[in-house]
Image (tube, rainbow, N blue to C red):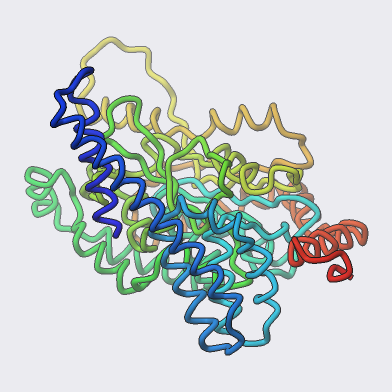
Length: 467
């Protein structure tokens, strides 16, 4: 059905764009195509209505679970049918089904709700956002800050935040902490292992690979590692976990002309009528999201996904904090920001030399990449716009320039010691952030959310059913 629908649309577009006054034969063909396109659309919409009504017609738990799964598959393939499903009262139906004690049914319902665009209220008093920059193995600095926050709050990272967004290495951390909920200690160990496995290349072999694939490291090996660690699951499937926050990874699409376009791999969908400024979807596999977001030029090959060519998100947005805030306002438009935590992966400032002498190509490229991936401009803007008790940025100064692909144990340990000194100097700010992250909902807020949930569950029922 999907293929037929697309073929009809393409044929229809081709014919209707042929001429302003087509001959009778073409006009007849165009009318037939119009008719077929309408039939295809009506057929898909009718299928949506039948799937929603099918949920209301059975009580057997296993059959219900199978029908919810079927609805999810349909909504994933035809996202435009969310409007029809919502008009058919799918949300009240799913919200009531979610009250069932059967865990597989609950999980299936949560995924279906996410596919319609339904969003749960935030966990705290307001929206709590975690944004992690790109930066290769220097992501250990971000892990250090999270270690301290976890110690201060007594809660794991996935419970502290409603939305976690990352670019490149930050996306890896976002997935490990938000979706897979790996403990921080294990997370650091895995992170070091990834660094030693991936950034391990003979210089001569790497240089030869640069010549034919524009990638110093083995992109295929990197893909295989991601597939092995993350499995074959789609982004949206993480919505089955009631403890999983909203998570996203950012890449850069480089084949749709200029300017370059950011792409957001999401584990959620927005409600019909709500449009993000950024392209993106939830249908992709998790390993694909990381592979696309980490395809740094010169390090790994570009990643082909559908008709798009993806490279490292840091080419365009290496500090995704502003993007994360935008996505959160699309998800929870009437909820204020409670805490925005932005984590950098270290900065090193060199003394500038005012010289007009020859500069090597390598140095020029390094300067261009450094400027393109600068993270502090976003910080300066947000620092001026957001309240000081809402926005917190941690980005350690480094006394030595640690490369993004550093994998030597002594250098990584040196990086950690730099991070420890930075966090000691900023302990007061860290404690303030932990205090704000720990603020709970008021009793009135909980009551209002409970009342809204009951109203959503019994929408369209007689008033007595809401009591």
